[in-house]
Length: 211
Image (cartoon, rainbow, N blue to C red; front, side, top):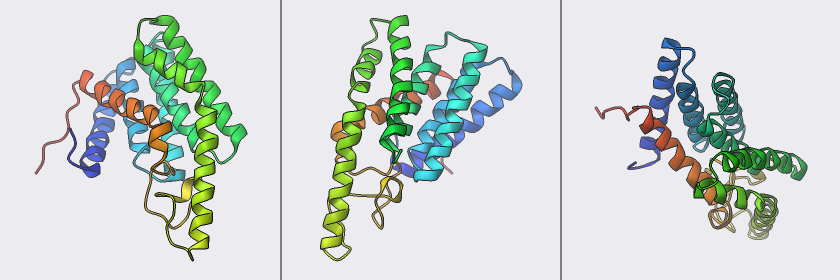
């Protein structure tokens, strides 16, 4: 769907603006808030640590606002679960990460309870139980990469790193994770991305035309 990251980012910037317009026209439009929050979450995946964290928190705020309008909105809960999971992997403290993963699991459980046949919800719930294990493995990989970099005199080692999760001087990685992460935790980000695109499409938001 997207030719490169810049096209993807432009799509979700446009989606945020469209959702804002829809909500301004009708402040009871829970779907607009969900699309707004979902688009912010997608944009967070294109940003570095501090900005990513801020965008995720803004996303959660919009999604919770949607739930005050429509408490049973499953898409809102689903996006909140992905937001807390993403936020967990950005934490430098294990306790803080586990707190976010616990919040995510509770939300995914609520989604499964409402729609037990939904395989996506069930898979997310299953994998969320292993999130803390993935977090430990990711941190170990990052530490080993840093150590290898120091031994080689500051060169890169062990995959791409960003300043967000303890790396420094590496190539940009919006979530501060190494390439290795995609074998362990990429399911969360991939499903979140697919879900975000689906939410935008469901709301009739299209990517802006190229000039």
